[in-house]
Length: 144
Image (cartoon, rainbow, N blue to C red; front, side, top):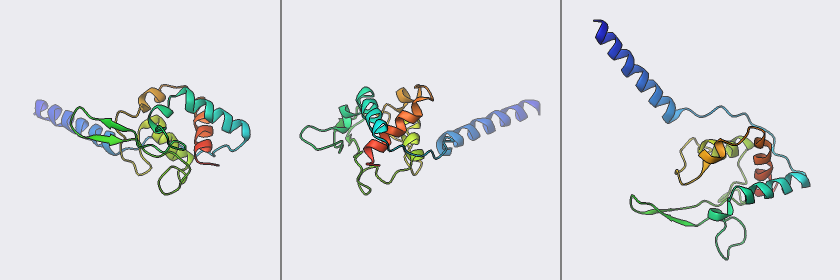
């Protein structure tokens, strides 16, 4: 009886942990996006320092429109997204919360996961103080 109970408890813990990992969104507030000239300059600096252009700035394109094709070792490929201020094809309609969820947790505004090629795990390790700079970067990209 004791072994059955412990086995059931372990299975239950694994299932709950798996469900949380699959469906639980990180708790991120909805911070305001700065719009000052200095904030835009800080955002541009972070864009360059974080290497965003490597994937989102395609040769010959005006702005970070995405479209860079990345081949998958598992077959097929995927294309980097548009991160311009366009509200239909870019991130112009994203809130500060949406942006931080993507940058630091690899989650889309709808809760889906981004491909591991997006280096959100690298950005996750950055100091919490950089959240303001990430928001300045979002303000720059979204044209606010």
